[in-house]
Length: 375
Image (cartoon, rainbow, N blue to C red; front, side):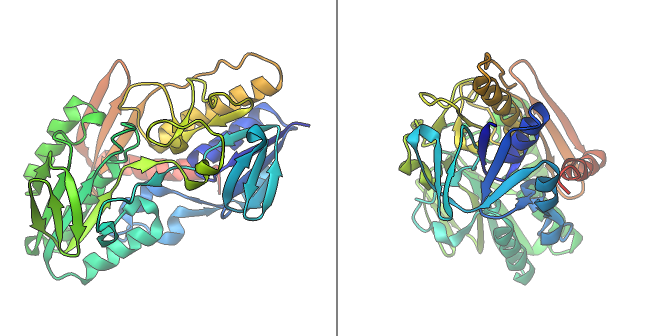
């Protein structure tokens, strides 16, 4: 019986499990993660407004694991040895015949004063802190920004920052407090949202102008302080900093022979196979894949990569040709709590739909549709 290990209980890890079980009813699957829960991170944007609470977006996975006959190993990975055949954890070693790494990425926290900023995509605790800080403010300036990994163009998660920005504007207007606040958007990029496509930049900046949101663009950040953002071209005061840094690989990657990209992610080919290692594949934020520099780090892309990784791993273990690839596709709805702006980009097209109430409800429906398979 083939023994397959999956590291991570996020989008890529769970999609890999479903695909493995779909294709092989008998293989032994072990999933390693700190907890048997899926945190549906796309819905973090709705916590500050109260549209979602912690319990709404945490899905216990015990029943899912039972249905698919998956062994759950509760642990944090600490190292990888024996050319990928042994996953070392803080709760013992796990042996495998094949491995899929889907442990996500890590935010780069090197900027001086980064402790003064809240990084929302770090999870529910961070977003609840944002919610509580905004609730306690009677007025002031809130700064929203993001940066990337200069050595890994795809290792960026800027889309949610537009949602937190526009969602906060909507929230304050509903509370009739917007006139007491100044919202500021900042980024080193001169054209924020360019990875979403040329149409997106104009639309996003137009939305900021319409909402009277100030911008500081094309200014490299030097530091954060408790009450200000400092850039190479000046500084501005703020009462709250919400910031998404660029991403790099997990710390445990350093305790392995995994090939790394210049930006610190695991190097993989178009089949999600880790270079130079047999029976080791990667999907989602952990990997550096060939393709356009706008290839997104988002759930949809992670799902596509995970499906390819699972197919190819089983093919390799069965002595078959492992030639499945994944489509490079960006699909997102930039939500603002009361409407949504849809953006789709492939290597041959770039489609953008303007803000509509229907798209907001479509995003909420998708959340229900996606999570029902794990509940």
